[in-house]
Structures are given as C-alpha cells and as structure tokens.
Length: 378
Image 1 (cartoon, rainbow, N blue to C red):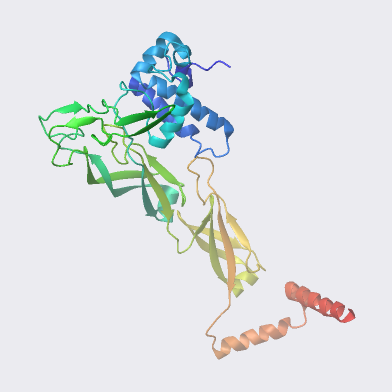
Image 2 (cartoon, rainbow, N blue to C red):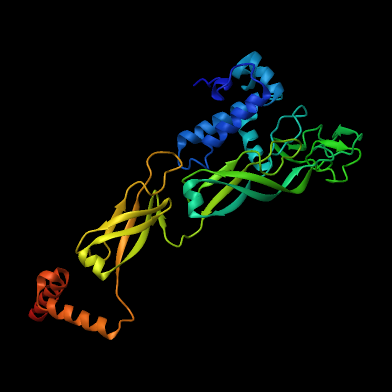
C-alpha cells in the first residue's frame, strides 16, 4: 500500500517553513498521542504516521531528498541506500534505538540533539464562586528559564562555541559490532553537540537557570475540581534552544459552607420550622447571585426537593445553566418553655388516633404489624 504524502499528513503545503512544520507536528502529535487515546488503534496508527512524516520533513537533508525523490529516497535499494542519510534498510531498528536512547541513526550530518523542556504542574485552589463565575489568578512558579547572561548559548560573551569534534555535533556516538549498532550520549560534550571555550558563569554552560516566574492565569467560568488549564510554552526551557515545555494548572475547588456541586447543579439544605412545613409559606433561599423567594406548600414533608431553575453552573463548553436544588429539612424546636410544651401536648392530643393527619406514620406501623404477623406464622 502506498504511503500518504508527508506534507499531506501534517496538513501542510510543499515549501512550508521549519517553524510551520514544528507547529503542525506538535499540534497533531498532542492530539493523537497514545497516552491521550488509550485503546484507540486509529490514533496509534495516525501518531506513527505523523512521527514518520516529521522525522523526514523536520530534517533539512532528508526533506531535500524527499522533495526530489519522494518515498523512494528512503526505501531499501532506493536513492538513499542503506548507508545514506535516509532510513535505508534499518528503519525498524532506528525506531527501536530511538526509543531506547533518545536519538536516531542519522549519521554525522544530523543536527545537534535538542530536548524539549519539561512540562510543569501547578495546583491552584479557588473558591466555588470563582469556579462558577470565572476569575483571574496570579501565580508564582519555580522553573528552568533561559539564562539572561548568555541568552541560552551557554557561553560567555565573546567566547567561541564550536561543534564537538567527537560526535560532529550530533550529541550522540554510535558503535557497531557486526550487525548490531548501539548509540549513547557523547561523553565529550554530554549530549550538547558543541564545545564551549568559556562556559557562562551564570548557568555553568547549561544555557538555563532556576528562576521564579510570575504568571496571570485566566480561569474560565464553570471549571470544576480536576480540570486542567494548559499554558503553552510556560514550562521549563528546553536544551540547546529547544522549545519550552508547557505548564498545566490543575484546579481544586474549596468546599463551600452552603452549596455542594454535582455537575452543573448546585445543592443546598434549607431548614424550615414545623409550622412552615404544616401551613406552608414563603421563605428566602441563597443563590450565588443573591437571594430568591421559594414557596413552601402546606403539608410539606422533610427531605422534599425544590428546584430553582437557572441558578446552577454554566459548563465551560457553553449551554444552559444548571439548577439550584433546595432540600428542606424540618427543624425540631429546642429549649421549649412550659407554655410551649403545653401547647404542643394539646396539639398532640388533638391529632391522636386520626390517621388522616399522619399518613406516613400510620402506613409505617401497618407495615410493621403485617411483618410480625407473617413472622409468627413461619
């Protein structure tokens, strides 16, 4: 089966810049990475295809050969040959060693090893109000940043930076014993691919320094605990001028004194008096936008749920707001005086033996009576 055009795989046109190729690769690789699409065979195959396309188009020599000869340049016996700058007949082994050692076969003409900066994580705690309505937060992170003294070169001003003679700038050394080839980090340049005459005193030649960084994070309305915000390029600086990693801000919403959240709905418990439950009335209940009135019908039982529409949470993806669900709980009077006790006793006497006033109680005791009668027959 013929392979797809590498430019088509990355969604690019022939003649695209190196920057366009890098951007397209990063976007597509993140979308189809197996870790984000576990169990998806389709995503796994697409990721391999994207990686293969970038390995060719991201290397100036391989790209030139591909532009001239197409896929034939990297087939065994083709224009690239087994010993050329292409994949040759060792494509499968190159992938294996690339995974094991972080590099490829390539040869002396490959570019210096560049390692993308690490992704960072920051746990951010916010209030329920901030989560529901959205907000801006200032955070401070510790990260590896480009050295301000040498601007990432790792060399003192005016100092020479030469290509490492041992690895020819690849940062890797290759050893072959018969059919087997192994690859490891260059012991002379420690993988940088360069030789610095006078290393920068600020970063000791690394090109990066530990630094605190202040950032402003916009929290969209409707986020919930566990949601992540990705700040592209705000992670640790990469090695040898490689792109910085990303910063992932993980949201944690504090417990609220009144409300509990379940998806787009908010829940709260509202105590009402015995009299309000029996006779009905109007009460005020809280929402995140202020107070609203709620009508309690007569003969309301404890635990009944009342819905206030549109007073919940709007999802970050948009759509309608959820609801506020109020659960009424009848509060038993406490600290009664003699007169109040007397009044309650009179009320109790007036209700005694009248099942229409206590349907739940009467139904419960009827069920208990049947249960014990059946138990005695067995």
